[in-house]
Amino acid sequence: MDDSAVPRNPPPKPKRSNVPTAPPEYPDDSYSDQDYNMSPIRRGRVKNRQSESPPLTPPYGGARQAKVPIVDAEPETTIGAAVKMKGELSFERLLRIEGEFEGKLNSKGSLVIGTRGALIGNVDNMKEVYITGGRIVGNVNVEKLVLRDKAQVFGNITAKTVKIEPDCVIIGRMNVNPQAPERINDKGEIVKDDVPNNTPAIVPPK
Image (cartoon, rainbow, N blue to C red):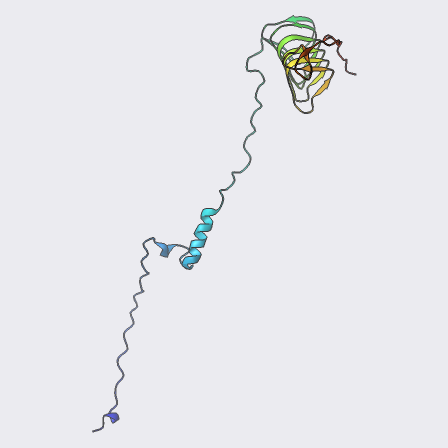
């Protein structure tokens, strides 16, 4: 009998299972990561790019720092903004002028002239004078002078130290050096000058 004539049944097909195949196990749980579909090389580039990115700049908008007060101590005498005085005034430590004073000041302490303050008269032998927006019409002879907030001086200045901020006005002669009120030459030697220190002050135009 010829075997070629006998029909053969095909082998049975394997049964398909409906159970979904479990995802591969990753020790670092990268299967649930958003970058899982990327190639390993691309994932590495993205991570390196994120690590090299510069830190975010903090938003601007912080509160302005308040201006540091010139003198920490409280003045023992204050001439208010609505006050106008004329005469002679003596004090020991600190005087603040917010109004107007015309006359002579007797003190070796400190003087502060406020924004609308005005002194018409000379300042002699004081320790410190701060002019913050106000003005002096007279000669100033002090150890330290500070002008800021568009302060004005119409007169001659003699001081060991002077600090002048922009937009301030000085009309007069200046002698500023560590040996003041003495004058020095370009070699630092004290010299005699025929110009007296008590030159009359320059009166500003009205």
